[in-house]
Image: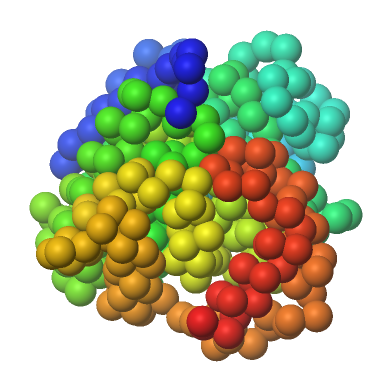
Length: 387
Ligand SMILES: [Fe+2]
């Protein structure tokens, strides 16, 4: 845990069922006269995009929709969205969807205000002014991107995920409406929920954890563990949906102010190379990295294990911590996350490249136990073999 710390929450949060109906009020408040809704084709086809654009239309706000966002968004996708935004003289962005849409919207905001190419802005605090005002509306309970200061973009030249890390990419408003998440299919509810759980666990256990993020992360773990299965099995359960959205939001605030660790380092390497959905990648790797990290802080891992439902009867702190590994495996199983071996495109011969990618990740120094390339290689192998 850090000796000294700071905590930042530059994004205003508006949360509640039906909250979406206040959208145009927020657009006007932020001075938006030409809005671009950045989203994906699936959401467009599901009718959720129309639920949002009809509000803009009825209130006489000019808008254009970009619905070509892809999972694991690439630099060239961001450039395509940016060129449209520039041509349409957009002055306010709405990121509507999962992390991919919101991260693309952040990147478009960077390009609109800073120009150049997206790779010019990778890194920590490289920006020099605020980005175009951005409202983020998550339709999954997972990424936390509505509240974080990062945009994660796949660089097509290296197939590595790169980060723009800057307080200036934080959305002005995070608008969270649980009703928008009830139609999310079970498999995406499961994978995005496991992403949120990974955020909370890594925020709590990583080297940059501090008292405020610890408090938030523990609350988020508890909420997610108690509600994920219910949200997966009955998507219409609005209470479970609400709790998941609160959990992912709070996990986002926590890891945005501390960091993630080895799970994300490995998952981002996987996602960059194979386009593996981010939450699936995290979920497949989480038990193995959790197990690897236990010696770094047995007590903290035992606290997580208890929240995961570990049996504590007659067990030492260390034994309880290791119980967390099986709890994580069981939860992933229960919500239907595939095994790494079942994903046809993943090949053991790529593990060297993936391990190198994990060591280069910007969050690698935050993992609580030092992990070298060989350690990541072994972790990929263990996860693949399901040991
Ligand atoms: Fe994540």
